[in-house]
Length: 157
Image (cartoon, helix red, strand yellow):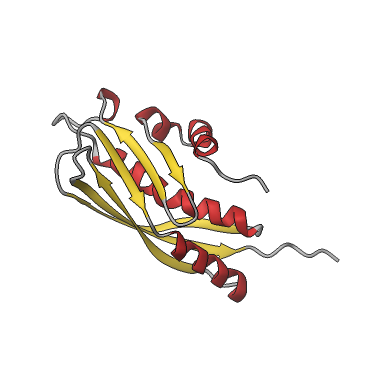
């Protein structure tokens, strides 16, 4: 089985989520338990107040969680759907420069995927992504409620 890498996910962004790609959202690291994404404040992703638009921060934060979901679905070798059911965001300060988003909730994904495969029911769970500037100050905190559901292989007679 081919492993998801930052390069593969960033290519996926270009092809399937061009708004995130052209705003500069990139995966820098993905491992079983955590994912790191970055985005740098630029003209194309700024708000009228000369800082990064909140929706761009939300895209980078969501990717740090969603990439982990994609990774573990792929590793399960099962057909499983994924969907963001809810989102909460707190924005603490102006986002300028390079912002790094980190999600350390890979274990939650692993548990949810095991549960949906076992029970054949949808499973929801919350993941958190923290965005920090180059000084290490928290710029934003985003929470995403993900829903995963096992999709049985169709049986034909």
